[in-house]
Amino acid sequence: MTQCKLDMEATGEKNHKYIACERCAMQPICLPVKTQQSTTLSLTDQYLAKRTPSQKDHYLFTQGQPLTDIFAVCSGTYKLTKLSKFNEEKVLGFRFPGELIGEDALHPKTYTHNAIAIGDSSVCRVNVDNLLACSQAVPDLQLSLVELLTRQSFISQAQFESLIAKKSAESLVAAFLLNLKQRLSSNEQPSNELTLSISKDNIANFLGLRRETLSRIFSKFQKEQLIQQSKKQIIILAPETLENMANS
Amino acid sequence: MTQCKLDMEATGEKNHKYIACERCAMQPICLPVKTQQSTTLSLTDQYLAKRTPSQKDHYLFTQGQPLTDIFAVCSGTYKLTKLSKFNEEKVLGFRFPGELIGEDALHPKTYTHNAIAIGDSSVCRVNVDNLLACSQAVPDLQLSLVELLTRQSFISQAQFESLIAKKSAESLVAAFLLNLKQRLSSNEQPSNELTLSISKDNIANFLGLRRETLSRIFSKFQKEQLIQQSKKQIIILAPETLENMANS
DNA sequence: AATTTTTATTGATTTAAATCATGTTTTTGT
DNA sequence: ACAAAAACATGATTTAAATCAATAAAAATT
Image (cartoon, rainbow over all chains, first blue to last red; front, side, top):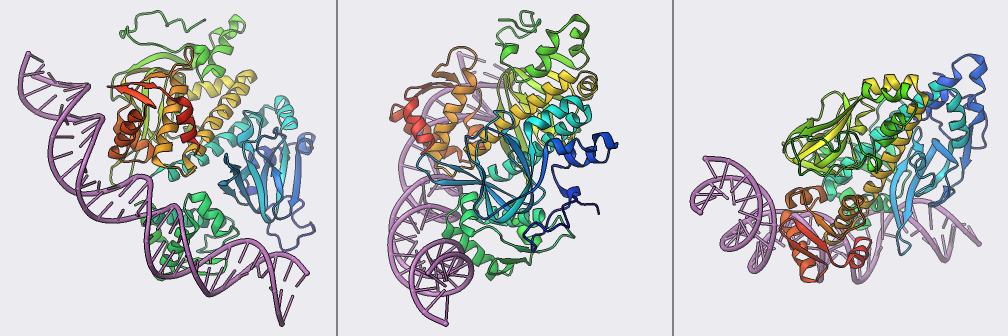
C-alpha cells in the first residue's frame, strides 16, 4: 500500500499512526494528480502541505476567521466546536484520520466553527487559493474537487439524518458507538475494540446529553454485557443489539 | 426583474406565484450560461426542463431510486421524507421556491429520500448526465457547479447546527418560525406574515416533537402575543422575543 | 510519590415532554 | 350544503432525562 512520502519519516512523534493516503477523503485532489505525468507531479506542491503537527488543544482555526486552508486529519483526533451566546462550548462533531476539516467553509470563505486538536494530532493542509488557481488550469482537478465536495455533503447528510431522527438517549449512544467503530476501524479489518480519544464530557456535549445521563447509559450497557470498558478502552461485545437499539 | 421566459405563460395553474430566477439556488448553472454569447445560449436547453408541475402528493422521486435529475422549486412546497424500519415517515426538511432538491444525491448517484409535493407545486428539472457532459466542455459551468454545491453545503451545515444545539421544544419552534419567515419572505420585502403550506403534523415530525406538544406551544405563543394565527395564516408579532427564545 | 485538578459514577428529586384520552375545528369529497 | 375524514387543541397522567448532590477514579502537576 502506497503512502505519503513522509510516512516513514521521523516527525517528532514516533507513536503516531498515520492514515494511508488511499483512505483519506482528500485523496481526490491529492493522489490522482501525483500519479499523472511528471510535469503535473509538482502541482500538488503548490497547494499541499503535508503533516502539520498539532499539539493537544491547538486551534487549527477559530470561528469567524477567513478561510485559508482545508485540512485532512493524518493522525489523532480533532473536535469541531462553536461558542453559544453565553460562551458555552457546543461540540459539533469529531474528525478522525482520513476525514476533512474546514471544507464547509468554502462558500462563505469564512470558518464557521473552531477546530481543536484532542491530544497530539496532525493534518495535511491544502491552501484554498492555490488549489483553486491550479484547478483553473487543470480541469481534472476541478472535477475531483466536485467529487470531494459531493462525497462530503453525502457524509454530512448521513450525520444530519442520524441526529434528526428523534431518539432516546440510549439509542443515540448506541448509534454513536457504532459510528465510532466504523470510522476508527476502517484502517485495518473492522474491529470491535476502540480507544476513546475523546472525553465523555465531549461526547455528551456532542450528543446533546448530560454527562450524568451518558455515564448511566455506559454503565447500563456494561451491565447488560453490550460493551466492556476499562479506562479509555472500549470493546463492543454485542454490535447487533446496539444496532437494533440505534434504529429503534 | 428578469424571469424565466415561461413566467408569464399559462401553465394551467394561474394562482401560482413563481419565484424569480434571480432568487433561485439553481441560478449558478442556469442564468449565467443564458446571458453568455448566443452559441452557448442553447446550452441550458440540453439539461434544463423548466416548470414541471407537481400536483399534491406527487413524488418527485423516492428513496433508493437512481439519480437522474436535480430540481429547483419554482412554486409551492415539497417535503423531504424517509421511511423508518417500521414504515414510519420521518420528515427531513421542507423546500420552498428557489431552493434545491436532490442535489445531495450527486455522490452516491442515488436519491436517499423521498421528495413529495405539498399542495400543487412545480420545479425546474436539471438532467444530471447532460449537465455533467456540458460542464466538461464549459469550464465556467463546472466552476458554477462547485459554487452551487458549496453554497448548498453551507445551508445544510447551518440547518444541522440549528438542530443539533440541544434546545427546548419552545426554542425549536421559535427558531422554526423565524426560519420559515426568512425563507418565505425573501421574495419581496421581509414580511412578518406567512402562510403555513405545511401541516402541523409535518412540522412536529420534522422538529422531533409530538403534535400535542407543538399545538400547546403554538397556543402558548398566541396567548403570550408572540404570534397570531388564524387557520394557516400566521403573523409574527414579536420577532425579537422569538429570536431570544430561539438561541436560549 | 503525593497532591491538585479534571473526569467519571451513582443516587435522589424535579421537570419538560410524551402518552393517553377526548373534544373541536378545518378540510375534503360527494 | 352535508357528511366523513383529517387536522388541531387541551386536559390528566406517566416517563425519560435534567438537575441537584455527593463521591470516586484518573490524569496532570509538583
